Amino acid sequence: MQKKTTILLINKKGKENKIIQIPSGIILHWRKYLLLINCLIILLLAIIGIYIYQKTSEHYIDKLARANIIKNQIDLVKVKQSLNSIDENIHKINKSLNARGLESITIENAGGIGDNIEITDINNIAEFYANKIKEIKNTLIVTPLGKPTHGNISSLFGNRMNPFGGLRSEKHVGIDFKGKIGDPVKSTAKGIVIFTGVKGSYGKCIIIKHNNYLQTLYAHLSNSKVKVNQKIKAGEIIGTVGNSGRSTGPHLHYEVIHNDKKIDPKLFLKL
Ligand SMILES: [Zn+2]
Image 1: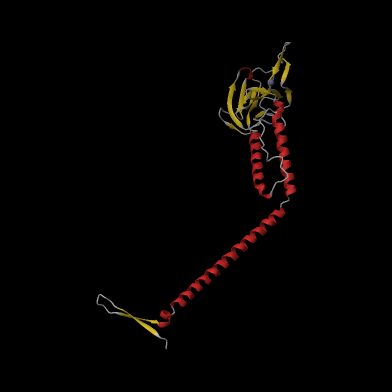
Image 2: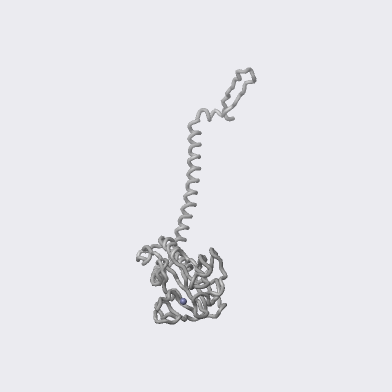
């Protein structure tokens, strides 16, 4: 029989007293029991600790392995070549824009890719070029390009003999395109109509503003299909060829205006 110690709990309010029996061993050897409980708690914590360590280190090793696979799949030399090629092309586009009197797209030096690009830079470099390409797209959308009508050129920009006769030469500030009355006239870039109506010797005429410094003008029309403040897409039909104003026969007179100065539209016929 196990030895037990009896504890009598006396209730002062006169209710029944309570008797508790505890094995005498616990009272005599409480230090040993406490030590045992401590050891058990430490053991449990150690098991939890080892489990967490194993799980996280496995995860880390796994991640590292995957990063290495990706790194090996990317051919840095090829990436550098591609980036340099993009860079060269942006410079060419800039040259082409400059030749047309347009603002060039600024390139800070992420361009001319150095030799020490790291895999970790690729995100930044890709983002940089994605933004540059977007800028180019936005510039091109508002840049008048190509012909406003299908007819051939009949008169270029610059000094020419007065088409109405006489000996004095005059400066022709646009390009004339041959055409028949009713031939479609298209906007050469995205923009907004700032004028439509009769304008002196231009006759029936449309002016489209493409950005803060570029406008195009279409003159001698037989008909305008647009209203002031109307938004126009590149290539949208805005009117028809005519013979209105100071004109010697049906044709389209086309101007490109850069910062209020009339410049040669021929620069914009091809990119
Ligand atoms: Zn003309």
